[in-house]
Image (cartoon, rainbow, N blue to C red):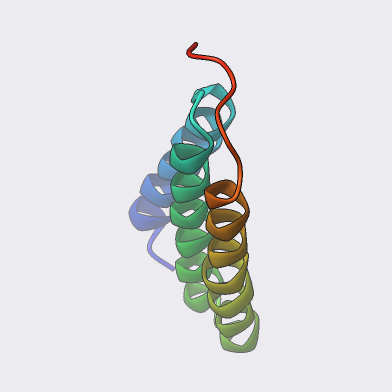
Length: 81
């Protein structure tokens, strides 16, 4: 494995995790978590765990993101903060 790429992906994952818990908009948090899941997919594929990478891409970045966005679209904003 290329350690520079691993380190860059690790830093990006940490930034995504911090951004997902600090952002106030749910849609932005969902998109950031989808990016986090895609980076996890790249890491699993780099570690030669292709079956886990496909599952992470399908479930983590695909289905979960779509379900989160569908749930967010059905909610109303009650405050203007």
